[in-house]
Image (cartoon, rainbow, N blue to C red; front, side, top):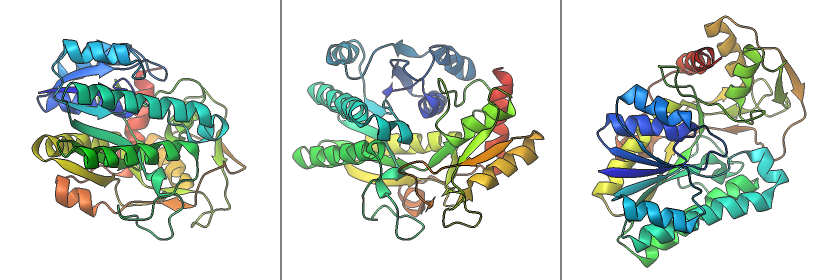
Length: 332
């Protein structure tokens, strides 16, 4: 069975490709490399010992997608491609709406034309906005606090409307919490271009002395130590959740939504201190102003994914911190 992975050279996409190949699927990657590197394809192949078909194309390019679907017999799609930085989305909302919505609409049109109606969509816990209580279940009210989250919510609405119009579709919407960590091999991990927007790649660049110090955005949140609390999940656990979701959409028609997290909340300072302890390195930091759109705390109820996908996160925070630094040491 052949799976098209959009954004497959990215952080979560590359780890998912590894898990797909290990599970016996064929993998076709389409990625424009705007926030990833082409050598990731070779690294995926080295880890798995299997070949990957790669297209350096933009998912917004309909002609390019048409050609891929004509050349490959695609059975299902996992859709990661999209811009993903909360702060950047606040400053450049039009860029986010244009790219994230255009790419998805183009992909769905081409899939429909080629009668490929099985998709796993990479959504986000940002669709819950600032939740009134915790843990977050999938039936919570949806509202967003930034344009990035709004694009994810709009795409969820598009997918739900698509299924209403055509019951042949099989759709799994995965709401991620905060992926960190890296593959045990140290070959693939989170390696964004430029200054990182997410916590862990920022921490490892400081630990690696590429950056002087970590900026912690606010210490006046309503949390135990004043820093933001998030549900951090190992990227390999998250990738394995996609395998379970693919199995689900291959087997059952319909549309459904699942939280992928650990169900535990860790503060920014807890992550920093755990990283320092397990890796024996220093991470200097300073407290700066809050970022627009950030919220106090966010962590998941994962009961639905446990029950319906037979999936549960297994790796602990110590392993997330160790594996993140191991990737950096392998790629100095």
